[in-house]
Image 1 (tube, protein in one colour):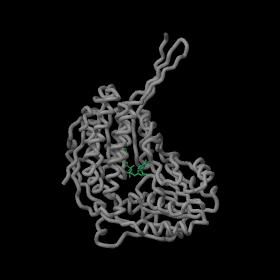
Image 2 (cartoon, helix red, strand yellow):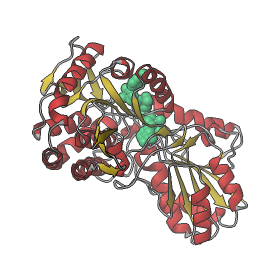
Image 3 (cartoon, protein in one colour):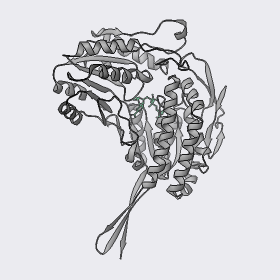
Image 4 (cartoon, helix red, strand yellow):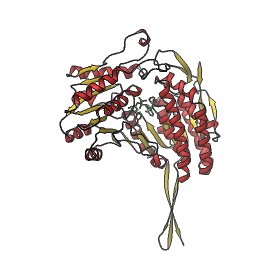
Length: 477
Ligand code: NAD
């Protein structure tokens, strides 16, 4: 069985308490690995190591930092198969998706290796003075990540933090820490100075809390639930820490009457069910124009029923199990609430039957109709494989419904009319709007949420700026 240690000051170490935990495969409960479980003491040691490494790393030239990040990307690629296998076994997603996630994280390291070279300053002539503006690394950054994309979402933080010259302590999700730790091992093996990148395993309430509350960390980059984000804002306030928060979502998907129905249905099915709906930018609410709602809905049902569900290690599966029993219970509760209030199930709505599913957290991808905003499924973040479809009569109504949410991460519209596309894209309250595309993530563009979906941006140029402070040097001449 695989064994996973923490990484502190360049060494693989066990936890202060010696406590370990078994990570199990959500497809069948088989043990995958034993991990050391850290606590506040381990987090403090890691923060101290990152603090000691900061002067050296922050003064390393951006060219040298880029060499190390490129080397790390190369190591991640050469180990991708092995890391992806661990990811599938701890998280459940199909192996082909796990591999794409690992390779995408290598691309992020490469991107920020180059972006770090372009951390330019400014020179301002003010007559009898000159002003120089520098952008310098914030200091020690704590990187706290969730279990749905444990490798990629960590790379979104590791890449820009190290490229900016920050040193880091990463806290991967407690029940899916294996692949994320391998990412950080690759970064260390690429020649990073000891202590510049550390990993501490353990519960959010202890390890995560220490990283947030300890004055050594100057920056907290967090992806996870909105409720955890609120806790972090409140506790980071004690030291006015810099924050990047990527929180929950409840993304609307609008299909206008002039949309390409087949393309829209395929895009909707993919973004609603991939990773079992456990994506912050998953399609959570579908609004279809009444003229095309019937045709669109039957396409969605047909495509949904083609999806093959099973153990992620089976090369033929499209969908794996859900991550945990509590995720599945939440999904079931939201579906039950909708049915009780008058919704109708067109596909799924229960667990699949058969021996191969009996020990895993499986649930069938589910299509609902007759839904309205009185139902939890249309308001709360389900984080499960459910596509509820509601009809609308006018674009104004669709946009009003789409914006009727405390979240504002992603929104999608499918239409063949440029005027409709622009009107909707400008009025939708979301950090990312997909027009005829079911994904708002692009490594070169800012990603983040409006309203209660977050604070700050990752990826693109903004991703690097999130780890930099501005300094004005005023020179009298
Ligand atoms: P979570 O908030 O429970 O946990 C996220 C991380 O925070 C974990 O590592 C956890 O151990 C840690 N944590 C928990 N309590 C903490 C505390 N008090 N202090 C510091 N750290 C603490 O989220 P999750 O269930 O792992 O992930 C699912 C959530 O993540 C969903 O709400 C989803 O929408 C969100 N998410 C958002 C994005 C985005 O980019 N906006 C991307 C992926 C997931």
